[in-house]
Image 1 (cartoon, one colour):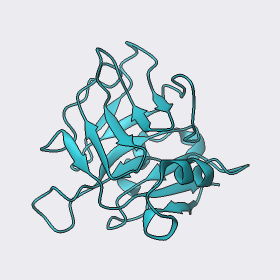
Image 2 (cartoon, one colour):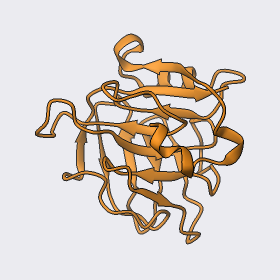
Image 3 (spheres, helix red, strand yellow):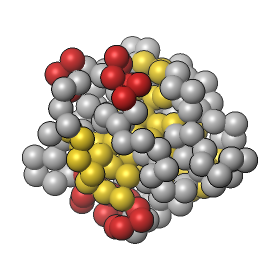
Amino acid sequence: LPQLGPHLPPWLTQLPWHLLYCSGQDGFSLRTLYQCGGRPGSPPPLIRDSQATPSPAALQTGDTESASLSPPPFGAFSATTIRCSSGFYGMGETFLFSPELKVFMWTGRNNFFMKGGADLLMVGGGSGRFGLGLDGDLHHGGRHPCETFDDETLSPQEELCVQDLEVWGLT
């Protein structure tokens, strides 16, 4: 997703990407994703649809419910490592993006950037909704407008059946 470059923090724009997690190789497991994405010294991760072009640190996926065989990816950028947590974490540099690469930056209304539990990874939140969420087996999730990013629904359907995921780190 080189197209996201203008939206990344300046300190990340020149760093190369490295594959840290791939559901096709590592299996569909949120626990494994945390382990691979949280290696010591590992940089901010990118989760993406493996059919898409590798890109800067972001949370990106496509789903099997789309009409096209290779749906365009959508997701969220995180300047911090994806990890299991008891509460929300992250920074104002976090953002969501749509398949059309429309970027939804932090609104400042809350600090619900990311939350990684054993059974759910969420990005964004407010009023009982999350911007992008993945369940523990990484096969299902959802995407909804949320206060953190004032985003539109990232894809035609709010419910998500995950096709492939990858975590890319910047070093």
